[in-house]
Figure (cartoon, rainbow, N blue to C red):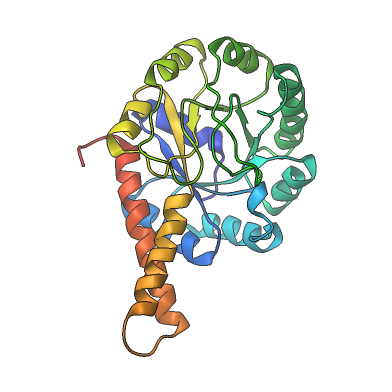
Length: 280
């Protein structure tokens, strides 16, 4: 069932949980992700970042994601992650995406607000939800440039949320895209301050590599959406390596099954953590 991000965030707030937002770089990842959601009877978000469209073209992946969401037995939002241009936002909405993120975090606060509102105006006409970002999340996702972490400032968050037409705010608290170099050190004090200062749901990017315990600490401090990309892609690579290293003949269909299964196992575990109801 295709739904908006706002609907899923409202559900998450009532249940003190987070919704997993899983990058789907190809069909196999999408299949494993949605299978895990259906078997868990849990809502999810499936997404693709604008910076990844060179290898995963939007005109290929977009219609597939939207149709898969419509056919699913659970609620699914289809989300453009780290949107950088109005053109890509409009294109994703044309394919039926129900949520877009505009990443204006590299600009001044004033410019970020103005540009976010321009994107929001486009999204609202299509009935879509909007996510914004403040601070600098480390690693690479929006572009191929390595970003240095800069914590989201509470005073900036208050002004941004007051002036920007958004449904969720992505914050930087020491989280990073890609593989962490060592153990992630999240600033829970800053997260708690942000949660107390703004009324909107908070978003944690760079979820791959964060411990189950730290995920739950984030959820209890207002995080309602958690982005996962690297873990799913690592699951694909691991499954491929294991399958191709095994003796005997190899074929696409068995490879497909192995990859879907490994992605499914990873996503199902994360959904259980994000639902925040029982110990792992």
